[in-house]
Length: 152
Image 1: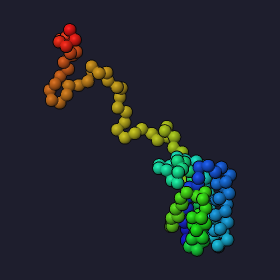
Image 2 (image 1 turned 90 degrees about the vertical axis):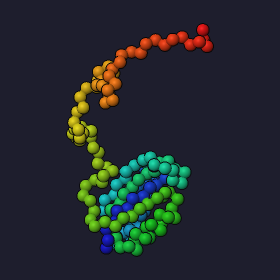
Image 3 (image 1 turned 180 degrees about the vertical axis):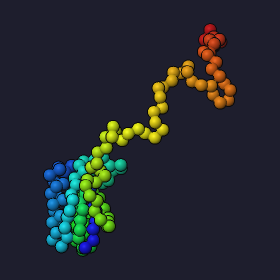
Image 4 (image 1 turned 135 degrees about the vertical axis):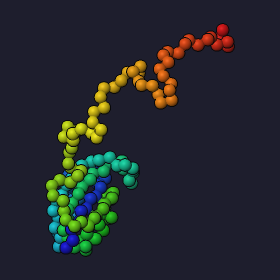
């Protein structure tokens, strides 16, 4: 049996319980065809980059699957029929990742450390800027303009 990672997107107007029911339905299809489902992650409702079938958001779900190709084909056939599934993608992998997926790993800004280049220091005020490269030094404020002739 081969190892797969399977992600599918469900419509935004179904509830989280209905998404869990879809996951259980497809898990049953895999197990009925001689496969096993390992890790299941529900990534929740997320915004889509572009509209898919008139939906701006979708429920994302990930499944790690160890099953024969026939089981995957049957699950994908049922997903094509279902109106609740917007998109799906199944990828064959060498081995399943340990721990949570990249989508579930939360990175805190404080844990990342300093950015490359370090601290740039305090901001300078407008008058503190150095001269430009072309030799144009700070000239100071502009003189008052002469009155316009058409408004006199």
